[in-house]
Image 1 (spheres, rainbow, N blue to C red):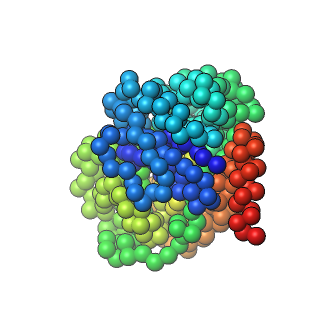
Image 2: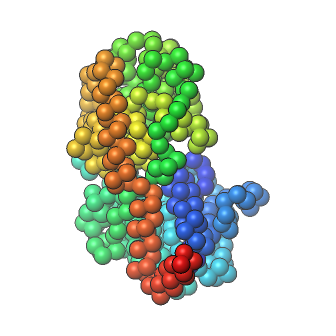
Image 3: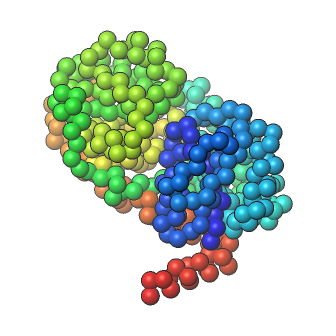
Length: 387
C-alpha cells in the first residue's frame, strides 16, 4: 500500500516530529511512503530515511506558517499523477495549499486524509486562545471536504463538529511516543550542569508558550543556586527573555538542541518537566517527557490537562502559572520522592494510552476504512510473511 505523505521536514517543530515518527513507523510495517514537503530543489534528500522524497517550491516557511510558490500546486499534481498513491495523508502545514488539496485529490481520484495540528484553549481565556479558535473556524469548511480528519483529542473533535465537519469524518488518534526510545535511563546532564535538582522546559520561545510566566514563577520560588532551570529551545522571544532573566545563574539557556539523543538524555536526567503554554494541541514534548519517567507539570490548555488528569501529573491554570509554580516548585525541592512518584505515574499513563504502536494501528484501521480493498490486500500479504 502506497502512502503519499505531505508534511514538514523543517524548520523543527511538533509537526516535523510527528511526520518523522509516523512515516518511519509506517515504513517499519512495510508500507511504501513518499514524503512530499516544501524544500529548495537543491536540498539533499535524506538518503537514510527509507522513503522517496518530492520537493515542493515555496516562498516562505516557518515553524507556524508556510507560503507555497505559484508553481507548488502544479508540481504536486504532477507528482501525484506520476506516483499514483493509494492515499494522500496531509499533516497540515498551515498553508494556502491546504485549501486546494481536496479539489486536487478528488480530481485525481485519490482519497485524502488530514492531520490537523493547531493548538487551542477550550476556555477562551485570552487573545491568543481566541486567535487559535479562529484558525479552526477558518479551516472547518475546507476540512469538511477531506475524506477523514485526524485530531488528537475529543475536545478538538467536538470543536470541529460544532463548526460543521461531519462527525463520521473526524477521527481522534492521539499523538504516540516510541516508548522503547523514550524511556527511563542513565543521564549525566545534572553532573554537567552541577545541579542538585533539574527542571526543564523544552519547546519554542514564543508568546503562546508562556515561558515568561515559568521564569517569573522560578524566581518567586527562590529554589537556590544548586537547583537549575534548563530552557531548551529557541524562538522570537529568546533575546528579550534572556535580557530580562539572563542574570540568574540558576537558569541555563541551552538553545535549540538538534540531537534527539541529547534531548532524551536531558529528559531522563530531569526531576520535572514544565510546560506553561497558553494554547496547545497535544504536546509531543510532554508525552516524551512522561515516557522518560519525568514528573510533569503542564497547563490545562488543549488536551494536555486530559493527559495528566487523575494523578499522572500536576495541572496548572493558564491564568495563574507563576503563582502556582511559586507553591509547587519548593514542594518538589523539599520532597524529591514526590517527583519520583509522579514520574512513575507519567510513564504508566503513556504506556496505557499514548504509545506509537497503538497510534499506528489506529491509523491503519482508518486507512482501511477509506481504501478497504487495498488495505485488505496489504494486510493479507503482511500476514503471509509471518506464517
